[in-house]
Length: 128
Length: 340
Image (cartoon, rainbow over all chains, first blue to last red; front, side, top):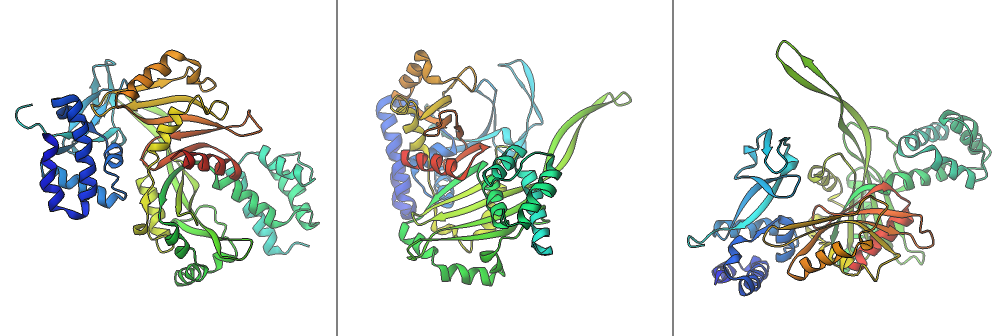
C-alpha cells in the first residue's frame, strides 16, 4: 500500500505526525477506491494544506519538506493554458521563460511569475 | 468657529475622501445632514462643507467617520486567521495595547488618527479600541496602515524601425492604499489588504504583519481555511436562493481535472441552468472539491444591493472587489464564517 510509506515518517516526526496521518489517510481512501491511480494524484498547496490541516504556513512548509525528502511527493511549477491544462512543468521558479507557445489555443503567451502555479505530485515508485 | 488646525485637518480629510470615493457618496452624506450638495469638488468643500463645519452643522468627526467608512471596507482581499477566544481576550487587554503603543511611540494614535496622503514608508495611522458598552473590556482592536503603492498602466507602444523592435510603454502611477488588521473577542483576525493589480498578496501581508505583529503576535494564530464555506455555499444553493447568487464556480479533483462553470454575464445566475448544476454536482459527488466561486450576497431588505464576493486564492482568503459599507462588509463576512 502506498499509504504505508507514511508510517516511518509519522513515528519520526512527532510534531508533524497529525498532519502526516491526515495526508496518509487521504491517500488510503483514494488508493482503496482507485488503486494505482494514486500515482496520478496532484495537489496545489491549498488542497494539501486543507487535507493536512497544518494550521500555520511554517508547519505546512515542514510537512511538505518531509514528504519531498522522503520522495513521496515532488514539487514542481506548472504553467497552464487559458483552457486549463498544464502546458509546461518546471523544476525551479528561476527557469520560467518569458514566453511560451500554447498548442491548445495555438498562440504565444507572455509569462510572468504570477503564471507559475506550485503543484505537488506523487513520486512514481518505478513500477507505475 | 473653526480653528486653523481643524480647518487644515478638514482639508486633508476632504482630499482623502476625493481620492477614496465618488461625489455621489459625499453628496448623500451631506444630504443626510441637511446640507446643500450641488457643485464641483471644490464647491462642495469651500461652499458646503467648510461653512457647515464653521456653523457646527457638521462636526469634523463626521467627516472622519465617513472617510473611515469609504476607505476601510471593500476593494480588498481579506486573509482570515484565528486564535482561541481565551487568547484573544488576553491580546485585547487595554493595558497591554497601551503599553505596546507607548513602546512603539504610537500612543497618540489611540486618541487621534493620523491623516497622511502618501507616506514614504508604510505606517500605522490609526489604533482603534472598541470598548464594550457595559465597560467589561475591549470587544475588538483595529489597526490601520497607510502605504503608497506604485502601479504600471499600459499607455501604448513604440516601434523602432532601426532595431525592428516594438517597445511597450507603461506609466508608473502612485496611489494611497489602506490595509487593516482587526481582531475580535471571538479570536478571528482579519488582515484586509487593499486590492492590487496582481493576484499575489504575499508582500503586502508580510508588510502588514511586520507593522502589527507586536499587537497581534502571528505565532498565536492559525490560518482559518475557508474551504468548508466554499463547499457549503455550493451545496446549499437551493436553500440559499434569494440570499446568494452564483456566477462562477470552479472545482477540481485530486487527479488535476478541473471544471469551470460561468454564467453568461454577471447579472445571470448559474442556478438558472439545470444542466451545468447537475454536471458539477456529479463531479463533486466523485471526490471533486470546490476551489473557487464568484458569488453575490443579496443584502436583506434591498434585493438590488448585491455584494460581489470572490472566494478564491489562498485557503484563508476572499475578496470584495467593489466598495461597500461597514454594515454590508460585516454581513458578508459573518455569512462566510457561518458557512465555515
